[in-house]
Each structure stands twice: as structure tokens, then as C-alpha cells.
Image (cartoon, rainbow, N blue to C red; front, side):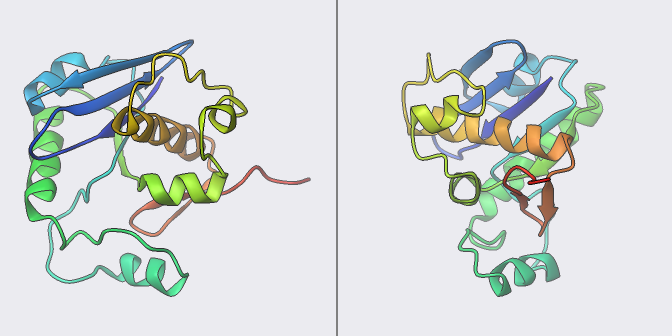
Length: 166
């Protein structure tokens, strides 16, 4: 089971859990996220930096060198602090999901997911998605799926690789 989390600092965050069907939940606090996250989730993709630091990391610099546009970890310290707190709560609550960082714009661009039909072409129903934040959370779940299938490149932000051509 995989999940995507569109984490925000000042409004409801959106959690998209993808198993046999898609389930999207709006949550206010990190504890709410912990309580809503199924123990069976193997990979949780979050739209926030999962490490603290000053300046760009080497991997973020590589991402820029590759021509990607994204929000560096230094841009939103509150979001970074919230993500680090969430990571700590997961450990304290015995959740073993692997946390990865995603960027909805990068996932959308790399996989050409620009709307409901494109999302459905990846086997994910768009039913129940009622806004941009929910759509971005679902993009996180899609990124988690690609990561789980070893089809991502790690630049500090997981960049999904379009389906491999044999």
C-alpha cells in the first residue's frame, strides 16, 4: 500500500492512500495524519523536505542542474519543521512507512499527468478528487508507486521515470 501527502502549514493537509481503491482524507494536525495512516503503507511521499539544513543540498543542486524547477528545502522552514515532526511521530508510533520527498509539478511534468484522464491512464481513478491539493496528494501516491517499482531517480526529490521502454 502506498500514500501521498500534500502537507501544508496553515490549512488542511491531504492524504491520498492508494490500495485497491483511492481514499483521500483532509487532516489538520500531524497526529491526525499519524492516526489516519494505515500501518500497511510501505511508502509515503511527502511534498516537503525531510532533512534540515541550510542552503541547497548537493542533490537539490543536481536537480537544478538537470533543469528542474522546484521549491528548495530552504524556502519554507515551517513546512520543513512540520515534515520533520511528522517523521519523528511516525517513529514514535511504530509506523514503518518509508518517507520520500516528491514535488507535484515534477511528477506531473515527467509523467504527463495534467488532468483526470491522464491520471486514469496510470490506473488511478479520479473519482473523489475535489481540488488541486487532493490532486497533488494523489500525484504523491503515484510517485510512491513509481518509487516502489524502482522507477525514480533520487535528487533529494524523487523524479519518476516515464515507463521503461523495452
